[in-house]
Figure 1 (tube, rainbow, N blue to C red):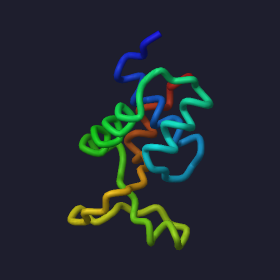
Figure 2: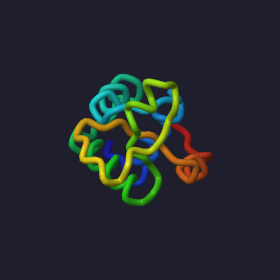
Figure 3: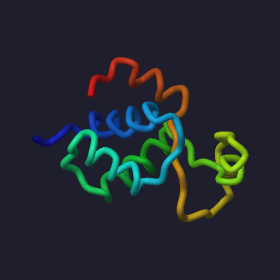
Figure 4: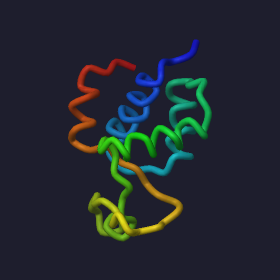
Length: 100
């Protein structure tokens, strides 16, 4: 069965909230594959992360802050390639009704 795009986005957000810490797209993809048996691709997960960041529903996280136990957005000027994503408070509101 194919999930509508919005449901795919919600699945990604829900997965991150459930675990409570930022992750890169590849572990998000693998985790969803294992826990929700998703049928969409790794590339789709990457696109979702970027799209949700553009919409202000995800942040790219500062890895140094993570090393100190904090979740902080990466500086917008940073051109870090391998990034960790985490949902914003706005995203939390959006998926309050999400049922996996």
